[in-house]
Amino acid sequence: MNTVELLENKIKTLDITAINLLDYRPTVNLRDFDIAPHLYKGLIVREKEFKESIEKVDWLLYKDTAVSLFCAIDAIIPQWVYMFISAKLSPYTSLVSRKHQQEHLIDLWIEQVSRTDFTHLLGKRVVLKANLKVPDAIYITATNILLSYGVKTLMYGELGMPKVVFKQMD
Image (tube, one colour):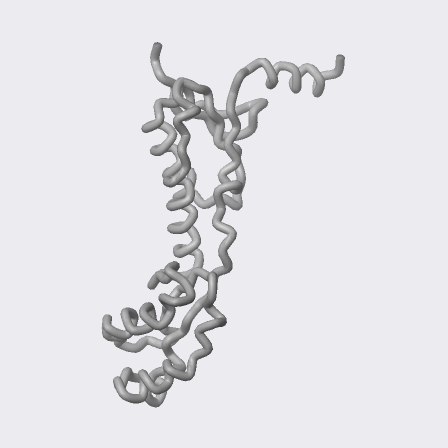
């Protein structure tokens, strides 16, 4: 038996559950909605002109997407503007945020992990697989959630050589 086979056999006997947090990444498409083109002279919100401009938007473009509202220029945007745009988007999506796309994605990802039932991991040894594509916030959320479910040991890395993060004392 070579070294790789020995390692594979040892891993199988460890009784560790591996979780790949990429599996919980939302699959929804993300879209931006820039308020700037709808501002009067590209500078300010004038209600009448703003509402007329918004009425011309093809809202179907945002169907079944997660929408991030922003303004590409440094303008003072009244709060009702975000409410107005959200109301226009509501028949097409409920995933509207004032955050940048990456932050919006992380929020949705956290929500996905938080909704997962991990009761089957009570008293188990769990490793969160290392992946640079997974933001730190997701690892933090997963750690807190898994500890609340009573995992015996929580690790990070790969099954063969995980880093122990938490170990419950017997």
